[in-house]
Length: 67
Image (cartoon, rainbow, N blue to C red; front, top):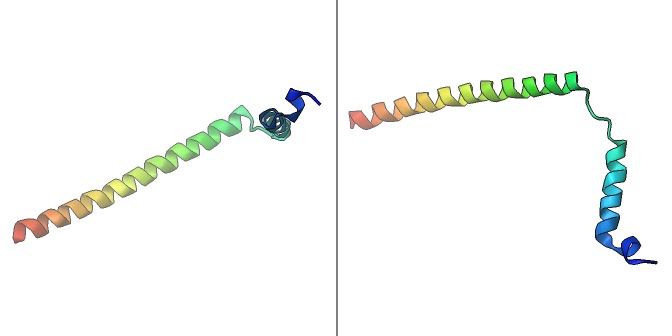
């Protein structure tokens, strides 16, 4: 038994490398398609939330100016 075999950190990284070799990575085309889907969802969500923010800002402005 030597230092490198007993070291928990070394065993952790060896195990991590072993697990990474089992991963089935997406193709470039799949990665691009999924990235574009995520970007589209983020943009749609931003527009949706921005619309609600604008709506509620106007409602608050109307309520505050009436009082």
